[in-house]
Length: 201
View 1 (cartoon, rainbow, N blue to C red):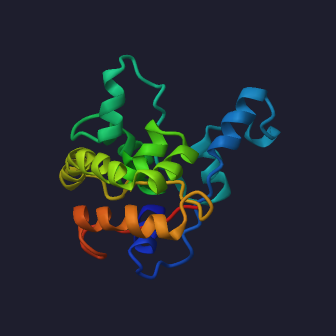
View 2: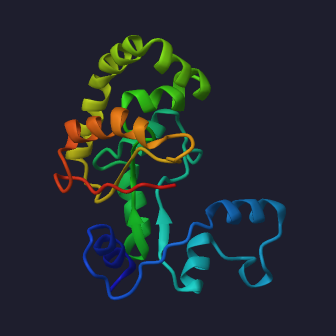
């Protein structure tokens, strides 16, 4: 069984031949490469070569957004357009992992606000002081999220990243229940209605 098969079976809740352990050493690798502190054994290795040497799968969520010749190419990477750079990215990962496509880092309009538009603490004050305004803002942003869901449905990606970096202190369960889960279910249906919910802490 390849890492690609093993990872997909794991996220689908099907039994793989072994635990699909996929570490995330990308930040360590980039920092060590920049500082010149990679271990001697891996001094001339790329990150995929190091992972192969370790015998683990590849964590490939977002390709390098700085590796572009024109700003328009970033949209190609983010929206995983057919025939675009995402297909090249997926081919480069091959059987060593799953090329996860970026849909949006926020899974709902209200979650999008502190990610991109409003300071985190201010959002919670506004949710308390101006709940109707926040609800109306979310309603107006829902069209964007419908468009993202439509792009997801047409994508060739096997796994999509829609929402990330949840934390019980920053995204408490009541917030999740009221402002994220209903939007996910509205856009994609309840599990297993077309998406695999994964919560990353």
